[in-house]
Structures are given as structure tokens and as C-alpha cells.
Image (cartoon, rainbow, N blue to C red; front, side, top):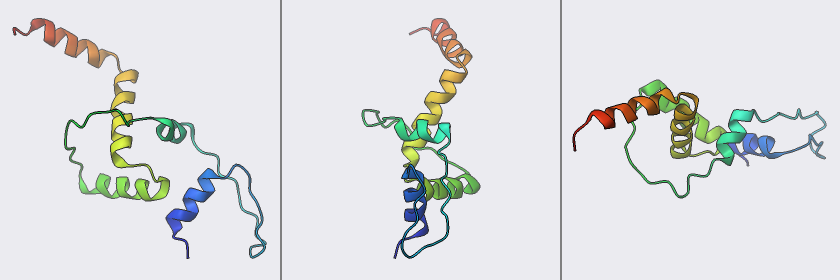
Length: 105
């Protein structure tokens, strides 16, 4: 018997809706959102471990559910999110660069 998570993963991975012999109901094709596809395509295999991240209880639950629904590891999601944050807000890199210029080694 398949779990709900397995069924959702299969639905996300199917390109077309198909009828099965046991199921005469039409299955709707769910389009994978662009952001989800970007997360799935993100390769964090060569990344280094740096910090232990702490989340409040609501986000812990949400991240657990996200993992079950998509089979995307939380570490991969967090690595993608940090990369995305710095790409969308280059001013953060400027703040870091300015700090490093003003810091004596």
C-alpha cells in the first residue's frame, strides 16, 4: 500500500494524466511550480556543512511536510534558499564586503 507521500511524488513526476484499470476517475495533471523545479534541480552535493539551523515549531512542521510531499531534503532547501536570497538581494554582499574592508586583520 502506497503512502500519501509516495502518491504525491508520483503525481509530481508524471508528465501526463493516465487512467488505470482499477481507477476510472480522471487524474489531473499537476504542473510543477517553477520554484519547486528549481529546488529539485539545485545540486548541493559538493556543498560544505556550515551551521545547524534552528526554526520555530511551525517551520519545523512545514519543512517536515515539505520533505514528505516533495522528497526534497531540508538541507537542500535551506542551501537553495540562502543562495536565492543572496542572488535576489546583492546589497547583502555589499554590506559584507564593506564590513570586511573596514575590519582590521
